[in-house]
Image (cartoon, helix red, strand yellow):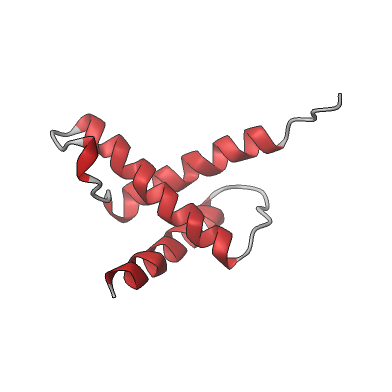
Length: 87
C-alpha cells in the first residue's frame, strides 16, 4: 500500500513540476509519475546535504523538496534533450 501511495505522490509532484516549468513537456502519465518519484529522491538528496540526515536513509524531502528536485530534473532533461547532435 505504501508503494501505491508513493507512486500517487510522485504523480502529483510530477504534475506540479510540469505546471510550474515554463514551456511544454510532452510526457504521459507514467513519465510524469517517474519524474515525480525521481524528483522526490533528488530533493531528498539535496535536503540531506543541508541537514544532518544521511544520504543512505533514502527519506523523501516533502512536497516542496520533491517539486524542487523534479524541476531540477526537468531543467537538466530539457537542456540535454534540446541539443542537436547532428549540427
